[in-house]
Image 1 (cartoon, one colour):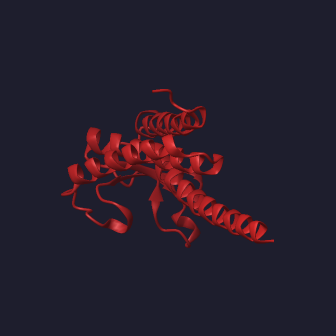
Image 2: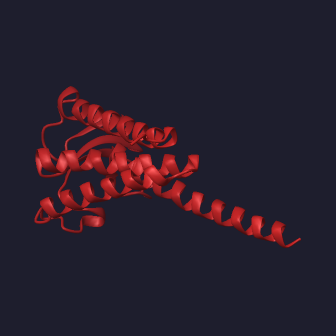
Length: 169
């Protein structure tokens, strides 16, 4: 089976996100020497700091007691697999980019769950007073990927409507 070139782009984005995510997490844990949860390294204090958080759950503390570690790991692997299959069918650059970012983010976080039992979060903008959550590169990739997925959906829907209107005239 020959993998389409555009699909390879999705897999490339995913691989890039996983590598960058894991390298930066290793730097946070080993290079900065953040050893315990809540330990912080000031960058642009108080607006932005690198603060180690052991995220045992998902967004907003759901499953925060760590009880769903393996369920969340299996779910993330399944999501990445479905996205990998979807990438085989994708034919739009924006869709491929979105799928690759989400897939890479899911894999980056599942690596942490399997290795540590928690996800390494460290990007801390809580000093702004507007964004109290601490997150990581994988989370950012997932968020950007979802935004691009919505944008792709809106643009492809609009293009389909324009195409139908052009056929009628």
